[in-house]
Image 1 (cartoon, rainbow, N blue to C red):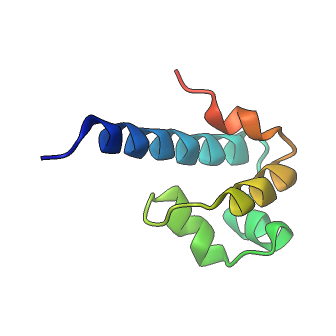
Image 2: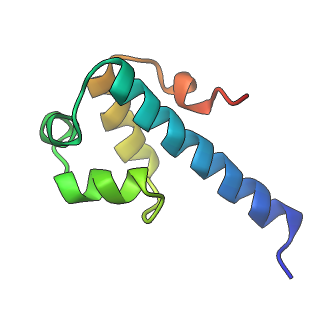
Image 3: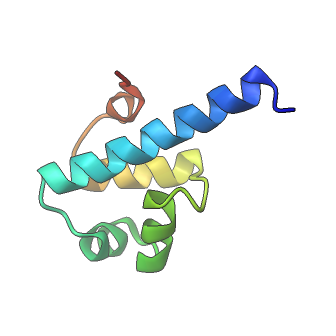
Length: 78
């Protein structure tokens, strides 16, 4: 049985991933461009957006720099 804390962590990561994807779409930044400018592999960006890989804080900082937002915007959940 999963603990409530694990479920909560999973939901947080899914919300962060959704925010990365939504911000990229709003700013019309492709996965390829995001990866190139963040010095990451394009496939890795896809894995992040599909929630198949967990992003480190360092990776999130790279992504927000390219997206031109503050890191707190990734943590704004409805």
